[in-house]
Amino acid sequence: MAAINRDDVAHLARLAHIEMSDQELDRMAGELAVIVDSVKSVSQAAGDDVPATSHPIPLSNVFREDVVGHTFTAEQALSGAPDSDDNRFKVPAILDEA
Amino acid sequence: MNTEAILSFEEAMEKYDPVLGFEVHVELNTKTKMFSSAPNVFGDEPNTNVNEVDLGMPGVLPVVNKTAVESSIKIGLALNCKIAESCRFARKNYFYPDTPKNFQTSQYDEPIAYDGYLDIELSDGTVFRVEIERAHMEEDAGKLTHMGGATGRIHGADFSLVDYNRAGVPLVEIVTKPIEGAGSRAPELAKAYVAAVREIVKNLGVSDAKMERGNVRCDANVSLRPHGRERFGIRSETKNVNSLRAVEHAVRYEIQRHAAVLDAGNPVVQETRHWHEDTRTTTSGRPKSDADDYRYFPEPDLVPVVASREWVEELRATLPEPPAARRKRLQADWGYSDLEFRDVVNAGVMDEIEETIAAGASASVARKWWMGEIVGRAKNADVDPGQLGVQPATIVELARMVEEGKINNKMATEVLDGVLAGEGTPADIVEKRGLAVVSDDGPLLEAIDAALAAQPGVADKIRGGKVQAVGAIVGGVMKATRGQADAARVRELILEKLGVTA
Image 1 (cartoon, rainbow over the protein chains, first blue to last red):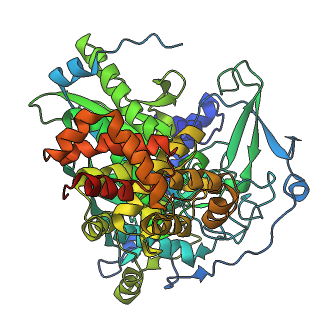
Image 2 (cartoon, rainbow over the protein chains, first blue to last red):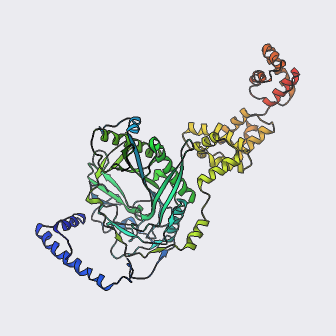
Image 3 (cartoon, rainbow over the protein chains, first blue to last red):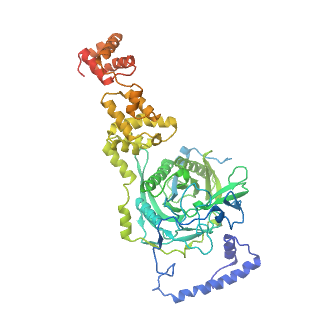
């Protein structure tokens, strides 16, 4: 059984900006452990002769030439924004500066 | 407001040994962005250089800009790095409105370039080797403007406005290994290192390298340890120090601040610091915390970049002469002393002198004009010497007219002023202003007689063999002719008259 405790879930929830109740944290800790264990079974199928990969397709160097393509107008860019001002996206003040 | 205690730099140096580290972000000057075909242009109307990829819309796929990869490899090579045979991108996850995707596409465990070094020459010629840990590819974030509040800074802001034109602009982040042993030269080294990186990327032509536009940005890490201790102290990271002077000042200030904290028996807080140019101090940003848990994972939407050795060697063959090697070559070609050459470099007129010599001036004439005349005028006008618009051909022509005896040096500087004032070519100005050396010996001889009569003691000295005293008589003649005489001819005539051979 993978060791995913309640604190781990609370930490992840905080990083993901998801608000979770105590009850949800308890439940998710148990469920996540099962999920991780299930995914882990993949490692039984892959032997030592199968190299680790981050991509399923054996491709490399898929490039684009440096040529300008299409752009949006500011109006188009902002068309889905909840709020805007002066052709820019308007967002709440964020105190935790990245 | 900043009330934090600091020690004097000298005292800090007596007690502690600084260790530095730098992360320099270089914006590439590709035509398009790292992963989208939107234009990479500075200063356009907000949110007009964006498309669906830059805005992180659902279902979009990034495609890597080949030129950006080539530029990154060139930077790696210029920093004496190894180029990875294969490398991949990774997602750096964080929530902040400067990235609409909620992650930055970067590189994590497989940077494209690693294990390099840069030899940095300090102002007195000392060479200091800075080891490069890695140089990796990533994308820039959008630009936030904090609105409302009293100061316009983030604290007290009511809301922020976001322009994503910069989002997705190709970046190369260059990370040094810890830099030890710089001692009291740490601030100078910091400045010189960033200057060297800036010079290299500019010379490669891969970045516009304008710090004032954020093309080259520096995060400076500083820690102190007592002399003789191997273990590093706790570091602070001063973000976005965006001028060469500021890099030097920020490192110096952080050394002094850390020293005071340690002296008081307190631990240094590992945190981000913000640099303030107005007070030349830093203030606390935020402590390292959960927010730095970026949960990197390999970017599933991009395939690996494989740099074949052939490709790397092709790119290496296109590299221009490194700036440091070029300086050595030019100094040797021109025959300048170390001091003369350093002055030329510090004055920022090396390129101009090179062009002037290429246009036909001798090395000494080129130096005389740029260092003796133009640099000072640029300083008065508060611009870079190159911005005055003096053409190499102008200097060549001035020098030729002086050499031919048409005008003297004093007149030539007057002609230069005329050229700078837009009055025309040197020949035009000589004619318009009626500047010409008095070449008829008649009036000169009269003036010489008068000057000799006025200073009989000097005349005797010259007759007695003190040829260097002739300067005083030449001066008298030049004054009498209001500078219109050819000083070399005057000197000749005086010596002739007194029967002395020079």
